[in-house]
Amino acid sequence: MYKIEKDQTTKLLMDLVGIDSPYFEEDTIMEYVHSWFKQNNIDAFIHEYHEAKVTDFKGKNVVVNLEGEKGGPVICLNGHLDTVKLCNGWTVNPKGDLRDDKLYGVGALDMKSGCAATMIALKAFAENHKNFKGKIISTYVSVEEGPYGLGTNALIEEGYIKDVDFSIITEPSAGFTGNSYPDVSFGARGGYGLEIELFGASAHAATPENGINAAEDASKVICELKNVEYIEDPHLGKGSACVVAVESDGGACSVPDYAKIRLFWHIVVGENEKTITNEIEKAIERADIKCKYKIKFRDSPSEGSKGFMPYKITGEEPMTKAFLEAVENVCQTKPNISYFQSIGDFNYLGSRLGSPAVIFGAAGSNFHGSNEYVELDSVVRTAKVVYAFLEKVLCS
Image (tube, rainbow, N blue to C red; front, side, top):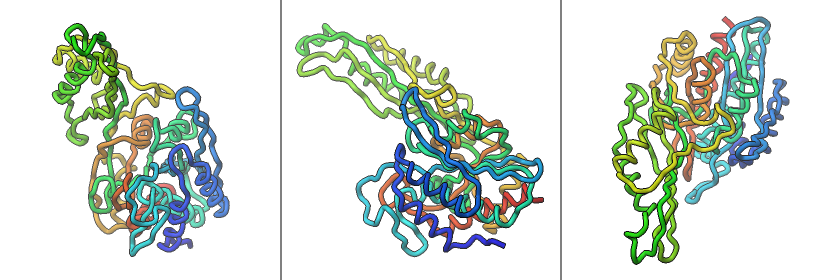
C-alpha cells in the first residue's frame, strides 16, 4: 500500500521549483514531469501545440490518462507548470529555500505546489488501485501565466479534455484568497482585454483650440469609467475595469491626434463583450468628447479563448459534495468556500466543459512577488484530498 508522505512530496516540489519555467519557457520542466511519470510506471505523453494566429508560440503540455476497467466518471485534474518572471526583491533563494515548514521559490505556491500534489496523488492511486471505474485526465500545462491560457485552451480545442464530469484545478485557493486552509473555490470572475482608440486632430500647441486633443479626451473617458454600473453577483461580487496602459504623444509641440486606452475588464455572470461595449459607449457619451473612437477587443487564438468567461457552481452537485466530504475527512474540518476575483485556466474548465469545476490548493503567500512561499503541510494534505476523492468516486 503506497502512502502519501511529506518527505517525498517535498522532494518532488523542490525539484520542480529548482527548474526555471517562466511562461513561454517551459520545455525543460515538461521533460522532467514526463520523465517522472515514466519512472513511476504511469503512462504520460507530451502534447505539442502551435498557436499560429497571434503569438506563433510552439508549446508543450504533459497529459496523463488513467483508464479504469469499466465505464464511470471522468475526472480532470489541471495545473500549470509555468511561472511569472523572476522579480526583484528576493532575500532567499528563488530556486528553492526550505525553512521550517515553508518552501520559498518562484512558483512554489503558484502553482508548482498543486502540480506536485496531483503527481503524488496519481502515483499513490496508480499503485494502490489497479482496477477502478471511469477515467482520470491529468494535465500539466504551459503558458497559464502568459496570455490566453494557451496550454489548456489547446487541450480543450484539440479534444484531449472532453466528456469531463468534474474538474479539480489545484491552484492555491487558500493562498490566493487569504482564507485559512482548507479553502475550496466554487467559481471565479471572468475578464477581457481590450482597448479604446481615440482619433483627434493635430494643431500647434500654441493654439490647442484649433485641434482636437486625443490625450485630453482619453482622460475624460478614463474618469467616466469610474462611474460604470456593474452587475452585482451575490457570490462573485461586481466586475471592474482597470486601465493598464495609456498611449498618446503630441511630439515636442503639437496637440496629440491619437490616444489609446488599454483595459482589462473583469466581469461576473451576466456580463460579456456586449455589456462591456455598452458601458464603454455610455461612459464616452457622458464624457462628451470630440474625438472619434473605436473599441477593439484583443486578438485571440480562437473564439473560445477570446475572453475568460465567469462561472460558478452551487455546491449541491453530487461530485462537488463528494469532494467536500473528502476535504473534510482528510483535514478534519469543513472547508471555507470562496470565489476567485481574477482569471485563469479554471475559467476555461469551469465555463467550457459543461460540468462542475472546483479550485483547491495550498496555503502560502507572496505569489507573483518576491519571497513567494508555500506551507508544505498544506501541499501534502492537498495530495491526500485528491487521492481520497479519486478513491471515493472511482473505486466505490
